[in-house]
Length: 195
Image 1 (cartoon, rainbow, N blue to C red):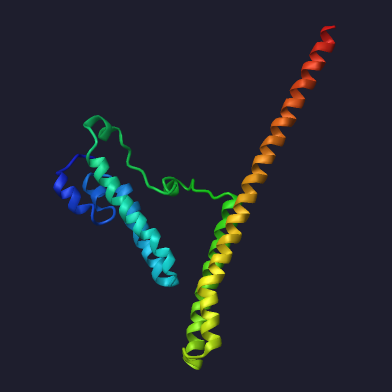
Image 2 (tube, one colour):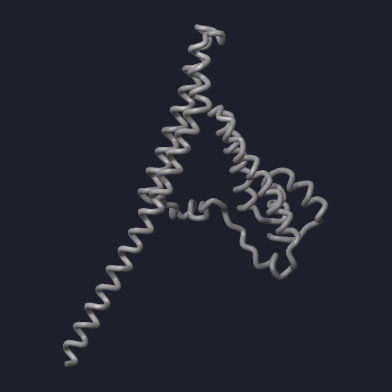
């Protein structure tokens, strides 16, 4: 049952992602924030990719402010708030969660890249154990793989995304132009029949 609670305890409990939401009765939202934060922390820990640490930090801060903003709403707005799962997971219990073909491909590419990066870290640790960190070739390869390759991949991804956006815009423009031509042809046909 949703209910406005003591602001001091809300502040204290919102220091734990999702706990502030649960304190006010938003169990689904609280569970979403709590599990999301924990899953992101596990991903950072397992992959060893320190750049991913930004995601749990963002979720932590967002959860804190979201709970306190809900607690600060007037009674009418608070009563109008719905308790739903976040991240599109509200249909999970009803078997309504679907991912389109493009979404599946994007998830697959991300999983492959993360898996390759994890594999590289494991292989590098083995090689470092055999050859030592003083090996100049091994050190150079490590810094190329750690610094240059991720930047290159990110740059290629940004260029590809820009090209997709341009191509999508052209497709929309082309469809708009085709629709306009069809309308003109239909109007011409109507005018011809009227004569």
